[in-house]
Length: 191
Image (cartoon, rainbow, N blue to C red; front, side):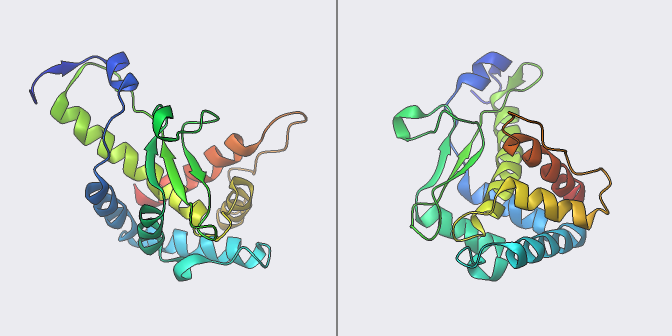
C-alpha cells in the first residue's frame, strides 16, 4: 500500500488527513531555528505594536501555544472538504478568530510534480501542511486575526524594504499578493 503510486492530479483531489502531532513537531523544528525564531519574534512585535487596540497578541506570541488554541477551537480543515466547513474563497486561510473561540486553519491541497508513493505523499503533505500552518497560525496570533497587509508591512520593515513592499493595484484584492510577499520572507527564515 505504501509503495502504490499516486498520480499528481489524484493526490491534489484527495481530502488528505492531517498529521496534527507531526505538523506541530515540524512547526516546532522550524521555530527552533535561531533565524526563524528571531524573525517571528520581531515580526509579531511589529504587527502587535501597530495593531488596533482590541486585536491583542495571543499567548504572548508563543506560536505553538496559539496553534494549540486553534486546535482546541475549530482546528484544521482541508480546502476541498466543503462538507466539513471549508471556505471556497481560498486554499489557505485563517478562519474565525481566537477571541470568538472559532479559530480555524484551512489548508490547501498539495500537488506533487510527479507520481509518488503513498509514503512519499505523506511526507510531502506533512512538510507542506506545517509550512502553511505556521503562516496561518501567525495570523491567529492576533485575537481578531492579523492581516496579510499588516504582516507584509512588518516584513518589509525587517528586510529593509528589499524586496520592496508590493504597491497596491487599483481594483485588486491585495490580500494574496501581501500574503505571498511576507510568506516569502518567513520561508527564508527557516530554510
